[in-house]
Image 1 (spheres, rainbow, N blue to C red):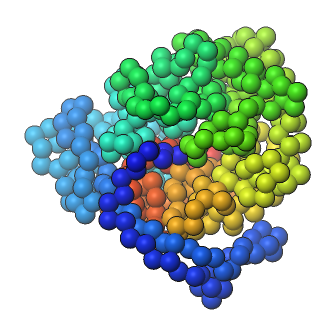
Image 2 (tube, rainbow, N blue to C red; image 1 turned 60 degrees about the horizontal axis):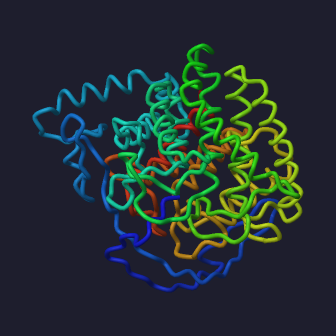
Amino acid sequence: MTRPDGEERPGITRRSVLIGGATLAVLGAAGAGWATRQSIDYETIRLYSESVVFDGPGSRTLVPAGRARLVVPGTRVLSGIFEQERLVDEEAAWLGRSASWTFSDEETGYPADLAQQALLDIRSLLMPNGASVAAWSPKWRYTWPRDGSHVAAALSAAEHHLEALAVLMFLQDVQSRDGWFEARYLPDGLGIPDDRERQLDGVGWVLWACGRLVGRRDPMLVRSDLETISPMMNRSLALVLASIDTADHLPPASPDYWEVRETRLTLGVAAPLLAGLYGAVAAFGALGDVRSRDEALRGADRLSTAIHRAFGPDGYPRYVGGDERCTSVAFLLPPYVPGSPPEVFEAFDRAQTELLRPAGGLAPGAGWKRDGISWTPETAVFAMAAADSGREEYARSTLRWLAEHRTAVGSLPEKVLHDGSPAAVAPLAWTAANVVLAVDALNG
């Protein structure tokens, strides 16, 4: 999740409201009800932009909120510029090379062009050097390994293989020789914007993304791509295995997608590392590296057993021994982790209620501040996991909700306020990637 230090929040207003049972009554899975009386301090954040669009070859600009008329409808191209026709044609040609499932005239329960519009959001945030920035607003114009990994997976799924490989090559270039990733990087790849603590989950995310390259096209082409990024794969696997070389086979505490300092291990670190090990099994297997594949598989077995032993008894909460779930329970399901036990699915279903916000989206966790705001990347993660786990009705309704809360240009924002208004940055790369992957799981 992109939570920059000193986040811009112009025009913030607050009003404390006590939500009674008559106003909000949400029933959880298996009849368990969410608390019907909660003190919610509604927060209002303005929409920073309608979208980011191309205003020339290789040049882009933010579209101010309320100025959607400046954009050629259905595109990410500024209207009225000298190069308009050329840029629209280039964009259309790029979309035309996408997988056929990215657009469907059939009744899907959500807009037929949702995946293609999300792909345009992704394309608008891709740099020529392969950097995928989280958003175009200044304090988000950085590359997060987590966001970039999901973008690479989405591009690969949509058959934009060269761009997917470029994103992973950028991450390989910035990775430290000891395997670690920083929390985020400057888009030129020449450093980091601040002194945030580096995050262990990054290696899990990139290995998972490498595994997502497998099975999408000719095995020889896949192998060629994986050979290009094999240095990153080797460093990442070594770090993951070293991190679980402990008495309980669990990794140490580290910041995760909440991007706050942690002194206790979170499921938000453990689950991505497990996803990464399974991704490594697929990727090294496609490379023909049997030794690394088997090491990854043995590591996945150890870590999986440790996670279920430590987090399972309490219903897979964010912290061992805790009682509040967060988005990371979805990281234990496909497309991240195969073959989870029924108890994980039960926890996933309960979390949908516990994380629910007034507008209908989800918060990052049950313990997140009660400001009434839905976060679209986490909501889209649940859509993706549901789609990959056979819960198609929930996936389709969640995708429809995301589509209904886009900006006037059609971009996916980072947040949705309690009243349903899109807010903060738009578009957000992680949300767009998750939407593409969810549609892929339903229709690919």
